[in-house]
Length: 354
Image 1 (spheres, one colour):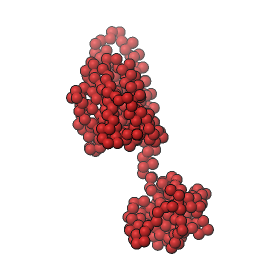
Image 2: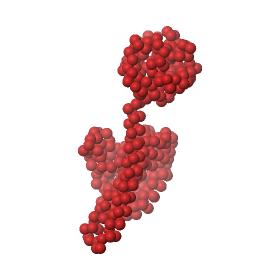
Image 3: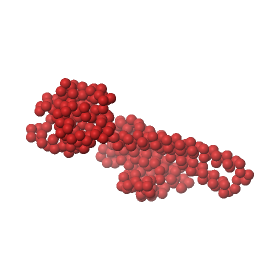
Image 4: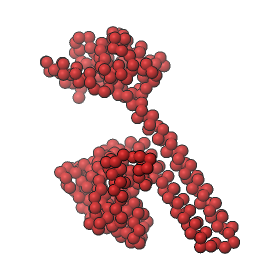
C-alpha cells in the first residue's frame, strides 16, 4: 500500500490509538522532522523501559543524540532521509541505551499530511537476546559438530588398530568392538543431524512457494527402499498434492523415514507414506506410519510442546526436532497419532495450494 493511502484513525479514535501505542511492548517514538532530523514529540512507556531515558529527558530533543552511537550517524541519517521522503523503511540496527548497545528491528513510518507537529513514528523491537542466542547456538553447533566428527574418526581408527594387535580376538573383545563401532556411528549420525538443523535455521528456503509433494515423496521412498532393502515401504499417494512449502520439507520426511526404520527392532520394518488432500478444509496431510514401538509419551509431549525441556528430560535425539522445525518453517504442524499397525503415525500438515 502506498504511504499516501495508509489508513488514519477515524475522528474520536485518537484516544484508543494512543492507549494501544502506550501499552505495546515495542518502543515507539513520535517525532517531527526539523531540518531532516527527528525531534522527539512523545514516546511510549516501552521506550522508557527499553532505552532507559525518561520521557521528560528526551522530549523535544534530537532523538539521534540519545540513541545513535557516533559511528552509526551515517546509517541513521540515511534512514531519516527515507522517512522524510515519505517511504516506510526498516532495518536491523544497533542503538545505544542508557545501559549500552542493543540490537533492534527498526521501522520508520512517515505520517503523510501530518498535524500537531508529528511527521512520523520510529518503532524499535528489541532483538538483542534472540540474536545473541542464535549466534551462540551457531558457534556451539559448529564447534561441537567439528569435534564430534574428529573424535569419532579417531576412536574408530584406534579401535580397529587395537583389535589388529590382539593375539586372539575373544568373543568379549569382538562384542566390545562392535559396541564401540555402533556408538561411534550414532555420534556421527548425531553430528550430521545437527548439521542439517544448522542448514535449516540458516537457510532462506523457508519462504513458501507451491510444491507438488507426491513426486518427491516417491523419490524419498525409492531412495530409502534401496538404503534399507530389508524394510517394507508402502505408499498411498494421490496423483498430485500441491502444498504451500518448498522442497526444503524433504528434511522432515527423510528424518521420519529414518526414525521409522532405525528404531524398529523387527527384522522387516513396515513403513507407509500417505497423503490425504483436504484432510481439513484448506490443509493437506503427509503421514509417515510404521509398525514399530511407540515413541515414548514424554518424547512426544516434549516435541509437541506439551512438556518442558529439563536436564533430565530432553529427548533421545534430534531427528523429531528436525522434522518439527522443518514443518513449522513452512507454517505447518507436526502431530503424533497411532498407525493402523499399532505403531507410530507422524502427521505433517501443510496449507493446501490450489
